[in-house]
Image (tube, rainbow over all chains, first blue to last red; front, side):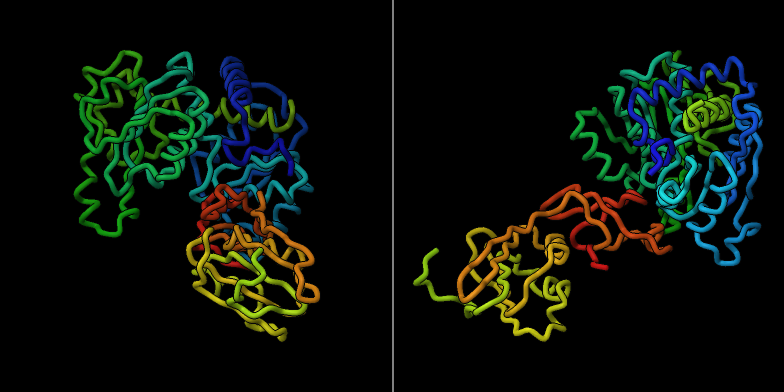
Length: 301
Length: 152
């Protein structure tokens, strides 16, 4: 297996996380460079994801690289029945790096084993999305000045939200205190609770979304998705409980920032957008710098 | 061992005795080893008293000696099983089935959305717990617990 690939956030040690974040800060100062000059990056999006794809393509363009690829599988040989293995092997002959988004879980790990060039996982189904995690960490680092000893509040769909799970794993290196706010149907999975107990990570679970957020350094909001509920009535009951409104922020800490992986539906009221504590749009921009740093690391540049 | 003790499953002349199988998994062990299709003479007992397991099962297969790879398969559901290799009615060799750290190409991942269930990929798991045996898929990173272990 190519160990320069980034498939899962666990592929990075604590030191590597900090190294990539420091590099991202350099790219933020000087986004345009020619590190990727003469290099071809394949951007293979087997399912559409506009935000992630544009963020990667911006990162590659700002570094002077060229891009080949497709934006959804209907315009690729997958429609002819080609396997992921064959597509990956063929494309890895053409390029220096593959960025891949695929709906099947474990596809990125498998591709990293059959490819001759590094793979960066841009999301494999409900499994991993490590570049999102790195941009979340970069946003936390930038707004708090540190990753250590923070009070992290996570709200919404904590059961299925892969960004929540990966961020939890990554932050576990930095002595966090977690507060999880979710309906019982969407609470954080048992596996993660066992992980936190084994690693002596403090965590608290709440179902009420109220002034407990006054302790927060980071408020990580996620979307409660209708399709996760077997019973539509259950969804109707909880859908409006986990909405962040501007008046809830009046007694929160000055350093507190609100993150959201986006897209947002209604879980953050529009009146929050102008609050200085709202950070989700800057967070998305940080994704470009984080991805530049990840690409540079994958290619040893 | 007390040789005067009455055997609950009759002795075999040559072959393999698999002892200390958890009683509830006897028939799964039989299936996994393909003993239901075996031409060898197979005798077994179930729900026998066991100090170690409470109730255990034992299987005796005449003229059959297992490869390590086959033994590996048993360890997924009977991690404490012991094998006695019998030659001329005597225990010629004892083997302990140890659960492996990794399980490669034996079990199926229970996640239907896993790449190993979509393409011809050899499954790979890390054993994250020995009793009950719990596997973590190397690809999709989902857990397959012992109740859901299916053998390829």
